[in-house]
Length: 215
Ligand SMILES: [Zn+2]
Image 1 (cartoon, helix red, strand yellow):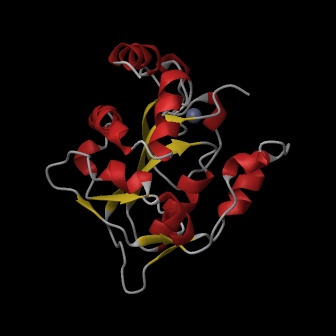
Image 2 (tube, helix red, strand yellow):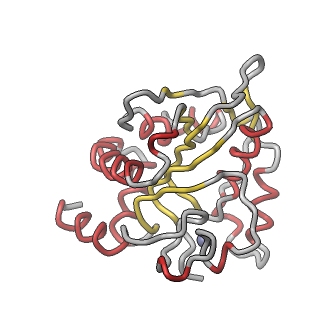
Image 3 (tube, protein in one colour):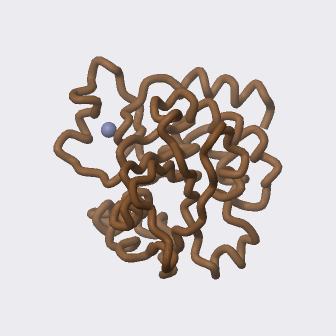
């Protein structure tokens, strides 16, 4: 991917977005900070920051990053750092928690792309914490696309899939979850729910790409 492509992409999709779902929206379309799609919906994570939409050059880069091209982390983390610094919650973050993979999937892939990305985030005080674990292997989220009630299916797929390591709690901590892609938000939501049950005061989310802008 040439430098020109991803710079153009940032200009196109790095503009205004809803801080609840991460989808593109006009600031004039926000009510209480949320887009029309998010009205009346409750998320366990408090706000989200993202680099762009899961399409075009960013989609190719994120997919390649997930499939062995870890050298792309240099560019992707640079973009993620910009999104983080512009998020409005940058100063609040105390811990970065990468969304965990199940150990079997991590073994197959050889790395957790979210942890690789997290290690390149710049922050003067926040630490990386890996005490959130995936205790149940879930199906690939994309395998549900043929279902009509796909959001509900995805939520059910990740329900109870995460836990905090025994003896660790997050009481009063302000956490930023880090992941590569947000699809319906079910994974982030379940992770945030688990962290809040463990005492977290705030859970933000930082992702590279947000999918699902188009039906
Ligand atoms: Zn929204």
